[in-house]
View: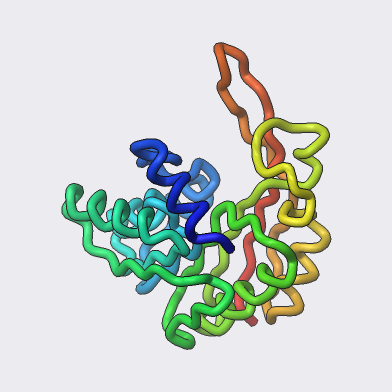
Length: 201
């Protein structure tokens, strides 16, 4: 994970991802009552974490980029939202054990060994029965979709993600490809993502 590269990317524009929550995060979690603490891993500029905090969750957002974390802190303050922000490498970051009811991982595109480490830490962070929500770029998007990383090693395959989740101690409730509409130069295109929902067993 390259902090310098991500810092450069975040410095290149005002907001890389915008301020609205990821559409799949909002669809999956929008109807749920807040149930305590939520952990947003790879939070970027904080759009999902701030949205969860507005809904009543006590949120901790973690990201590798100190530029992104500082931007998230400022956005939260501007909206009058309280959250904890942590700049850390997710492969070594160890959150408080059994402290969170929800973990969100949104577009964390890292090699398998790093992803397994993050999932292990996520499982440890959750209370028994706690929920994990994941969304990321699918490997099939390389040939059949638009956008996203071009390195197949960091892209997600539903069967592989399911196996990794089960290996980390999760009961998988959903793990499948989903289609995301992308508007580009007045043309509606499609990207392929992988969405997973699981509970710590």
